[in-house]
Image (tube, rainbow, N blue to C red):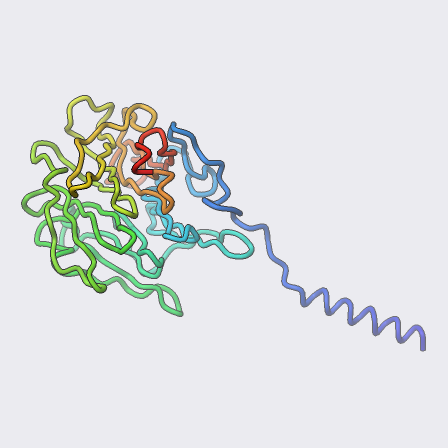
Length: 302
């Protein structure tokens, strides 16, 4: 009898252990994927986790959601997303409904929509698209009409905390446009005349969530350090923007810097550094970088 009882107890214990969920080692743990924060000199973000720094590898347009618990980025094979759970960050997964040849992916404030630009009829003719998260995954992208898209080419953009767009466009006049979100719609576009020079090539606007400052890319301003540099402009009390300032050698390099994104807490700038524009598969290399912004911002804008 005792032997039978022991066998029953052992069997129950075995089944109980077998029913306990076994979690593998999480992909990453902690804020910003558990990465040690950078200082005022830009560093590769999450090397070996997000960024493969090998020749010909491509990661770009890193972007955190407003709550910091969703991170999306682009590779050659499309857009990838990782989310922070109780067990840690999930392994990045490709959003299958998003095509490979896209540019400037950016999450909505609630991380339930993904916006990007993609070709609509020929190479270099890009319009804005959106796909939404559903209970069964991400739905198919839909092309967004005017004023978000135009008959020209939309290059790149970022979103404010209220899902308003700052968009670089080839529509006339070329440059950065502001498209406010009003009750979930975007009724009109306004040319940001105090930033656009019409002399250079302002593009890739990275707007702070509260619109207090903006980082953008320009390839033609004098005094640049490389093919294309990042510049900072501050919003003034009257709503206009300060004279753009080159962010200097701790951020810019002889290569191309573009795709700026400001972290939700405004502490960090995320951007992409590359030796090309990803027009030849396997030829160009790109990595996501991040840098602390305290040194570059006046106290009033931090």
